[in-house]
Amino acid sequence: MNDQASSVEDVRKKAGLRSKIQHQLFIDGKFVDAKSGETLTSVNPHDNTAIAEVSMAGRADVDAAVAAAHAAFPAWSHASASDRGRILLRLADLIEANAEELARLESLDTGHPLRDSRALDVPRTALCFRYFGGMADKVEGTTIPVDAGFLNYTSREAIGVVGQVVPWNFPLMFTSWKLGPALAAGNCVVMKPAEITPLSSLRIAELMTEAGIPNGVVNVLPGLGSVAGQYIAEHPHIAKISFTGSTATGRRIVQASAGNLKKVQLELGGKGANIVFEDANLLAAVNGSAWAIFHNQGQACIAGSRLMLHERIADEFLERFIALAKSIRLGNPLDPATEMGPLTSMLHRDRVLGYVATASEQGGSVLSGGKSPADPSLADGFYIEPTIVRARSFKDRVAQEEVFGPFVTVLTFSSDEEALQIANGTEYGLGAGLWTRDLARAHLFARELKSGMVWLNSYKRVHPASPFGGVGQSGYGREMGFEVMREYTQVKSVWVNVDAKIAPWYAR
Ligand code: NAP
Ligand code: MG
Image (cartoon, rainbow, N blue to C red):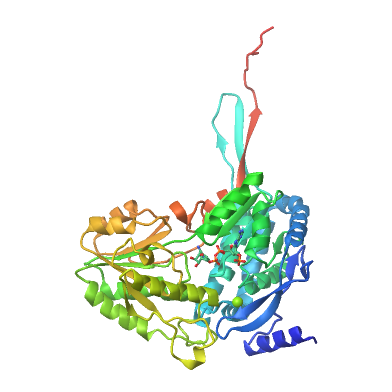
């Protein structure tokens, strides 16, 4: 056994994993090295140690994956929809059968507490594949009343080879959000996971093979965004790209897609307004607001990162909220008692800490946290304490820019009009929520918030049946539900002359 193999084996055993950690590219149904032989180190964010050297896809590997996907497309897109669905349903069962393994692998690679991976990431991944397995044979066309004597019908056809670029915050779950609908619709896929979190997507590729997916239908290429990701976005033989990540990269994807006019779907950043009115059930709002920002270390595009409090309840709310934040147990993600893990990379941890300084520079105050924890057992990891910052104005940078960490910006308001102005006062428009007992106010805000999703007396709920996506700089297109099937299909309109009486246009 070479050095790399033996150290990966040690990591595997220590993390309680039974199966091998896959670390090669998945192309045409096989795990292979990158043609260049280059690799990237996947790191455990708990202690900054190497997990595995993962093959790094270059342009030649993307070309090979696109060719395999094209070869697989005719048979896959013409297979009966229920056969495609059955493979996704089998995959959902396999995910459940391997739940503990997947949860441990995800926690090892990303830093998600095992408690979260077990209760959320893995079950949601299975749920998503099962939902789209059931969807496969329910994508219907229509018949349309047109001119007399004509039958006009539509069918929804697969687009072809689609590119998918996945971020690092929920790598396992986002793999299912992207693959489920694309495959149900009959497309073939070339997917690039984030460079820092490729392991669970590779494991899903392996389970897909077990579920019976034909070779070439799914290809998974860990690699750099600037190389493999950029080339997927540019590739002349990729017909559509689905991207989740930052708004800046989203813009680059749109530019790169122009060459062959790819269909583009973008799920970008957010700066979620979480509004607590004076009549809210405070206990529920405190707990829900902590979930909204601190779950997954705040690394969620739909995080409730702007906590907006009515001034009448602000002090009481903050007293309870700060106490709750201080009580959250930070620790090794693989410890089942841990409630908050490290951030997923060192670079990102430093970026989030940078925002603590930014807040102070602009006259804000740190109410809690704002630094790495003192616990020496966490000193090598990318940890940050749950951080609560009060901003001076809703125009401050920490109230406008996506921090993407366990970092919440507190703002206060004194009227419904002011609350709406602050809530709608960013360039983003992904998720927003509010806590109130006033039904009319709740629905009025649901209507007026510039946001793709609104939660009333809850926050950050997601389900594969419910459309997910944003407006403004949060992107366009929708994931999930029937809406996403429109993203992964194109409509064909077919005209049939049954018995139309058409007078000759050129009567000779
Ligand atoms: P990012 O650069 O947008 O990364 C997301 C994905 O895009 C990764 O797979 C990345 O590859 C890839 N990528 C990067 N440049 C690309 C390019 N030119 N063409 C095609 N793909 C490309 O995000 P990040 O730098 O990791 O994070 C920065 C910020 O983005 C975060 O702090 C957060 O504010 C936001 N973010 C939002 C979400 C979300 O769920 N909406 C998710 C992640 C990040 P690499 O892994 O090689 O970079
Ligand atoms: Mg990692």
